[in-house]
Image (cartoon, rainbow, N blue to C red):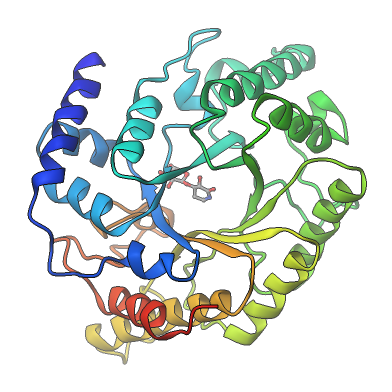
Length: 356
Ligand code: XIL
């Protein structure tokens, strides 16, 4: 893994000399006018190939256009702790190095999730006490290791289930640590990394409704109890042909900023497979662009909207194809790294909307 880190270092130097694209000024500069960080998740495979020199455009575009990155999978417990007691920080560290060399922030994703659980912690034979011990130590280790390097931290990912009486998803972590498990975990995280802003991240909360209400109750309860939480992450995976209303999105965000929290779009992607078959491919991309525009416009109207991230950089690497079993194209750049109508829509909104 030393080789990966070294190659990335050399590669990083090469990017600094790489010719800039004609996409100027880059999104990150336009977003900065709004005190907004703009970014995406980084796929481990793409990152490795970029480090090996096989995908130079990936790293160059990422560094040029984006001011914040998130690991798609490399910082999840399953990737970090593949075996009991044996941590592998190599890819995570290399991503932090990359970000720092290019003046980018890092959102750590994610401390704990009901998915991406290490195999050795998953079986029925694992005692609750062992899981509880793991969580406390894991949060401390991540917090201490990256306290000065991460800006935001999705401490617990996707904790909401509006069908439960308490609004919380039943998970092995809740079972091991008790009903107030989020309070405990966020306190441990804050203790280990006091300057890092702690996020609760979830899907399906962007449009109001029961799940949004459950998230509101959760974070309000945390704040009332003095538990450190600083932001709510809205994933905004729009995979079913949704057409969001910017006013409604704005109103949803305002409920949370009224509590003093920041709000982030953390994982936006917009699938086109479910669009009406009557639309031409070009019309589908235009509609997709409009969806990105509406979410970003709604966000920019809200003080405290500080991060906008897509779940991937280019259509070459996207989880959507697997997730909805289609050959989709949900991101801002196409498989050849060319900017799509969605890219230009994001650009226009950032350039044309008046900054505060
Ligand atoms: C996804 C990754 O993109 C996939 O590669 C992986 O197989 C599963 O996880 N919500 C989240 C992300 O918070 O971590 C998920 O990422 C997508 C849904």
